[in-house]
Length: 581
Image (cartoon, rainbow, N blue to C red; front, side):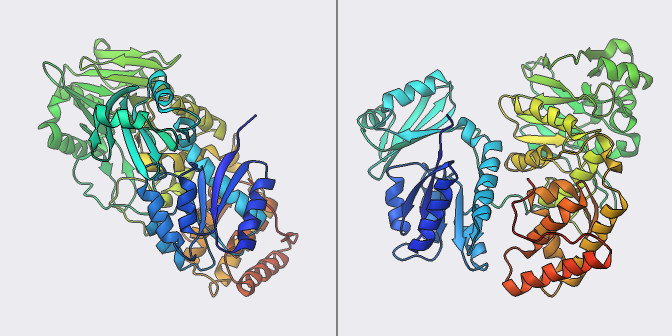
């Protein structure tokens, strides 16, 4: 039987506290612990490590903002998902600054509470928190037994223990103890103290675990005219296309050996970008003629044609590609066959370099180039993902000079995958391959568009995993009725700007999991659907109406009904329903 997750609810208004407790317990999925204010919440955390915390903001004794900061300052609970309750939208910014992950606006419905909590637990699961983290009570599992568990599972990371306000930290590498801290005591002395603890809480937190907050909407501007280091000795040396048309990515990895270093160029690219790629490569290794190994993850010209120039710069350079990519395309690029390492993609292929570094090649079937594959650098934890996670140019008005993807890049990623992959099933199979990688990637480096940092990987994986379109779906959902539904929705967006700005309305729609995976946006308009119009339109109205005053919500619903009626569409049922997902 699957164990229930524990949720700590902190709320000073008893009717709301009891309502939340009832909603969660009746779902059958959650065990609920309650507290009346922040101080009581901190006291509860001495006895239990919850899977999630839901807290009001305005409370006596200790308010929710101060409570959240204390939660984040405690190494036991610093990564615990935290949802704020508030009736005031203006409190949201303060909540995020304090360390909150999400919000529930009062008043809330049963469905809203459960959907919000389930969405956060899905996001947490994608980041491997639940899969990897162990937690519990010291009175149930003595400290020596906890250490034996860490050794048995070869855990690298931290064991954090808390008892009567004191915190001890044990640093681990493959289960072995590297160091111990407990107040002023260190190592053996600190460990002896921790072993005497008979009650308290503990968390085993492997080094892979991180939860980023407020990470998907902000970007850092960089100089894309220069090579940019994305991991230790791995560099982006690609081309930033003019007029904000996106990025074509090539990568340079430098591996040290006892003799000559290995300079690996991943996907040399097209002659159109040769000068930019060689210039950036020269910024790292002095001269592009020092490239002595190059990898072709596919044989198409925009990926591989520069291999001819790499060979001319260094005739001794070795090429790595798949047998199928070589047979179908790469052999036409004047590469001597004796200089080619052809790999078999019948299964994951592991290549050990002279430097000792290991590269894992994963077949990217139907990617769509013949013989395409992804490459994973296990030591640096960088996945060169090819077409997967690639994206088209950013939306109009998006900042051009940033390297890493944010939420606003999802629509371009969705478009790319619809263009390049035959079905969502293919994407899901590739995501399963990536999920099997150990250790998990910290950087995803696609062939086109923005790169993805560790904190954002779970967000984009979840978005791609939610796609459910089938073969030939570019032609699907283009019936006359579906086109009229799109027209009605765009009419609504134009007419409700007294209630919310157009940009705000689009952002609201795009932040919804279902809309993000089933609607293509173009600027501030809906372009087309990847679902039935009859499913989309009621959900569209519901999402726009959320978190507004009753008067504003009713105006949006009335406008939507009129828009549907004027176009001869069947009027949608606007009764409160669960999300389509």
